Image 1 (tube, helix red, strand yellow):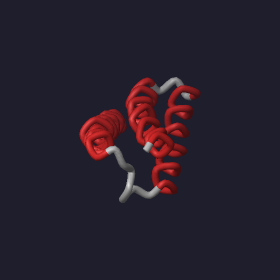
Image 2 (cartoon, rainbow, N blue to C red):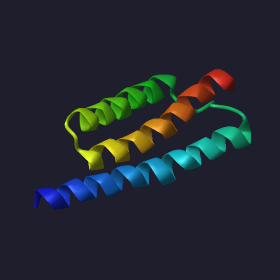
Image 3 (spheres, rainbow, N blue to C red):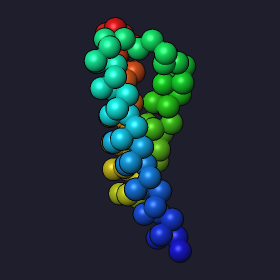
Amino acid sequence: MLQIVQWSTSVATVLVAIFGYSDQIRLIFDHQSTSGLSFVMVLLAFFSWTSYTLYGWLHGDKKLFWSNLLGTVFISIILVSFFIF
């Protein structure tokens, strides 16, 4: 049962990162603006993604590490967009 939960959370995490954040990044660059986004919320999401990435790395949990690293990369792009636009 634990393996099923681990895999399902990893898949859900990857789907959020790929489909949710990539679409947001596309909108930011299409409109050349981050208006409508909360800087505090993106900053908190960045902290959360990096914390889980670090936790997965320290515990040697590859599923947790790699799926959250992907999210960390995407949320980092969104965070940097606040300073570009």
